[in-house]
Image (cartoon, rainbow, N blue to C red):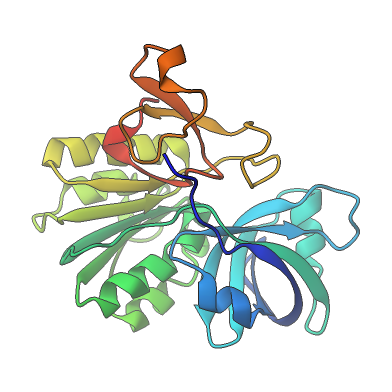
Amino acid sequence: MAGIATSASIHHARILDRQELAPGVVLLGFEAPELVRSVQPGQFLMAIPPSGEVASTALGIYEAAGNRASVMFFVVGGRTRELAALREGDFIDVAAPLGRGFTIGDARNVAIVAGGVGIASVLLPAQAALRRGARVRLYYGARTKALLVDRERFASEGCTVCVATDDGSDGYAGYVTELLAQTNDVPDLILACGPTPMLRGVANLAAELGVPAQLSLEETFGCGVGGCWGCTVPILRSSEQAPGFPPAEQNGSDVVNARVCKEGPVFWAHELRW
């Protein structure tokens, strides 16, 4: 398989705005016109904390329009605390765009499933599908109503928004995959990003419905560019995303390890063997 082309570069970006969407959930907008021009829906970036004392962290690219891009993240450790401390006028270095994103194709009825901070990776594919004339239904799950952040943005873009909360404080009481399973409006494509158990549930449901699904896998990246092979997932060797290393003749298995950061993070659900 030929290597995946990339337009990634380092962007020294000025912070334009910062919002706290919920306790511990930050939306950070920054000036990066070259990134906006090159990003594809579902790609990510590696953000370098300003102190340089902790490793860079992978974040989905949330918005990309004009001269502005943004990321949304939970504040959960030293790296994200540093990023959350940035204010308008500060600068941040990001390596982007990275990875392989979503493919909308000619789908006319698209279901997008987002769990928790997985919402941060699905606005761009929702916009792309809407621009192609598709109907888009967002199935959005979180632990509580307070963590259903920025859902109004998706509604304003033209998505139908269906929500689920673990505690029943808003929408369906239970898992978002259960909400999707109840639909009578079967989509012809499912896109999903969220915790691994949710993604497994989406994959199983897509198989039952006979609907193709693309999953954006959540993983902790060491390098983010495919060099360390620390974020692998087993996929079919016949997949066009299968890496060319090691050579096929050295291994008779029909399954190989693909790097989530390089060959992914988006994979076809039916090709994963996890």
